[in-house]
Length: 141
Image (cartoon, rainbow, N blue to C red):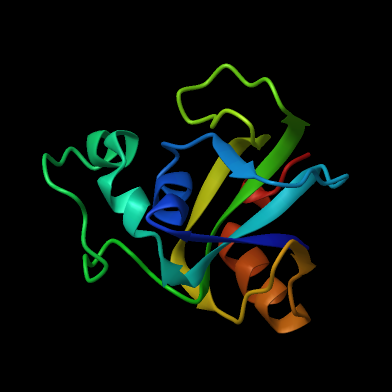
């Protein structure tokens, strides 16, 4: 299983099925299932982003110690269906490559693991724990 590490609060927004676009500086050839890993870093600019505040139904910036945010764990699995530069979504940042996500399945119990840059391969024991949670119903056909 492939994965991508995303900083919070963006990883939270993806896992909550609120953010269908991940903005990157590079494209990827990978399509299909991808684990969403919440990295250890916090994006302060993201905490002030109007889309994040609206998604959280908050009028103030979010804080790192909010219990909704997990760090250093796979928090969801999604289907990466396309990569484009011209997505028409409020989540698509101009000048970035837009990874379009669908069928987001949040994990009830995030699976701790180390993340890496770019698209990376989930360690076998982490993949087994993730797939165990998803079960047959959570897998794409």
